[in-house]
Structure formats: structure tokens, C-alpha cells
Image (cartoon, rainbow, N blue to C red):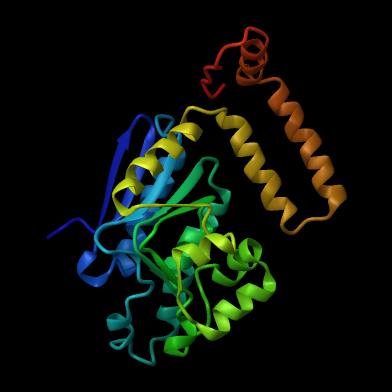
Length: 261
């Protein structure tokens, strides 16, 4: 049996690959658990500086496992709710993750698959990728943080359209609305994802983590709260070795070498 999620680390970039191509990488409970465990391990691993999430085969992730939904006993509501809350630990962890996470969307990203991509910091895609919320198409509401993250990425009005209508869009339209930042030919996507992730893996990791915290508060907090937090975080950053290295490199007209200290 194939491993439902594979992981490799190269040059301090961890690549997590959803690996159920026969089901278009649908998020089974086992796959969700593996993804959560792998993300936790990457967060704690000092040898990992950035993370790429992608899919094997023709899809990034088709969302929830619809075949499994057909088998759910309607009396098992408590178990189903517990499963959903367990799954929601993933977007929560991605939001709190101190390292930059890139979704390399190699194919269709639908439903919870799109929500997973939206929970990442950056999204790049193959020119053949397609995107859809899909929830309404099987008469369910959104989950996996889709409504939260999608609204903040493309705006409330466009998020309402995508969620309520459930229509799929192509990579070009996704880029136009800001859902993805860059698109590449299918054969170039993995290489470009690695190249982009290297930029973060070799970057000032403390500053990156502080920036992510600032952005999280900016989404919900008041301006005064954010200003206080930015001041505190800036003081932390000012006293890092990476900041001193960046200043020295600028004065010496050379590229900085960051060590995450």
C-alpha cells in the first residue's frame, strides 16, 4: 500500500505530498492525521526552514472523502463532530506555524482541498489547476476554515460568490483575483516551489515568524493592539543576530547569511 502522505527534506525545505492519487488526494481521516503530525514535526524541527504542501497525480486535493460520507451512520453525530474538530486543528496549526508554508497546487483544489491551500501563507499553481469551493454542490456548509481564509484572500464579496455558487475557476482567473500569486507550467511547478521555499528557508526565520504573528492579529485586532504588538516584535527582531547580519551585509554590499538566531 502506498504511503498516504510522503515527506522529504532538501536544503531545509520540507515537502509534504498528499498521496492518494486514486481518490484525487481526498482528505481521509488517516491522511488528515498524518498531515497534522507532519506539520507539527516540521514546526519543531530546526532543520526545516520552510514547508511545501502539494499533491501526487492530477489533483492537489479534491476535498473531503465523499465515498466515506455516504457510509456515515446518521446517529454518529458526536463522532462526526469530533472528527471535524480534529481536522480543524490543521488550519489552526498553519495559522500559528512559525515557518512559511507554500501550497504548490498541481491540479484540482476543491472543497477542503481549496481551504487547505488557503490556510497556507502563499499559493502557487500549475496552469492546469482548477479551484472550487464545492461545498454547496454536495449540500454542505464550508469547513476547514474556508470562509475565514477565503474572505481574507479574495474579499468578502468574491468569497460569497465562490462559496454560494460553487462554480470552479481556472488558474488564470484564480491569479487575477489574488487566490494564487504565480502560475507555472506543470513541469516547472515543483522546481519553482522549491526555489521559492528556499528563499524563506534561507531567510531570517525569527523575523518571518514575528511577521506571521503580526498578520494574524491584523486580521482581527484593533489598530492600537497591532501597533503595540509590532513595537514589541520589532524590539525582539532588533536584537537578533540575523538583524545584525543583515545590517552588516547591507553596509558591506554583500548577500546576508541568516542562521535563525
